[in-house]
Amino acid sequence: MADNKAKPTVRMSTEECWEMLETSVNGTLTTLRANGQPISLPVWYVVLDQKIYMVTRGKKVVRVRNDQRCSFLVESGERWAELRAVHVECVGRIIEPTEELAQRIAQALDEKYAPYRTARDAMPEQTRDYYEKNLNFTIELTPVGKILNWDNAKLF
View 1 (cartoon, one colour):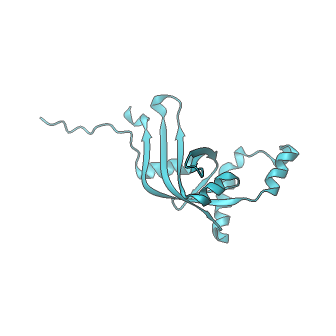
View 2 (cartoon, rainbow, N blue to C red; view 1 turned 180 degrees about the vertical axis):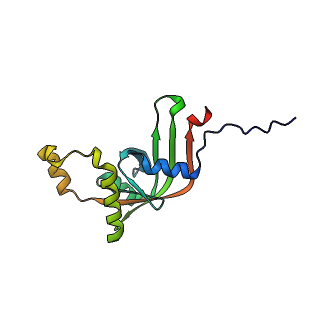
View 3 (cartoon, one colour; view 1 turned 60 degrees about the vertical axis):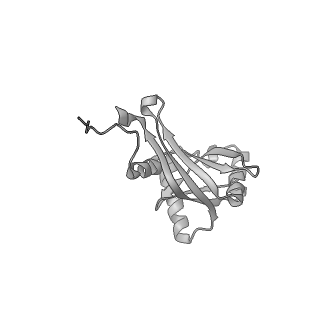
């Protein structure tokens, strides 16, 4: 006699994956160094129209410009039964957003991260100078391929 019970799965639906991507605070961007070695760094980001955007500076901009292959991960949980994650393979591009898109990105970043930001006047002068003098670039990540995901809580 066949058992018609559905087997438990840790997989999230596409909607659950995008909800986690949209609401997680920290993401991990993995880019490739010139020698092919991956490097993963935490970033602040927003999701708009199922694309991931970050406004940033530094070597990750150079790495995305040199090699568009990258990945993006959000995760949560401390105990095994709480572990959740969404991993997305992406094509990354440095873009010059339209005025409308730039405003949408800026507004979304402000709304999402206002509670977490350090006030400029509370920063050391050297830190303020660094952020005021260095240019920001917009990285756009477009998901390609399969979205890997798991939510161990679904087993319980």
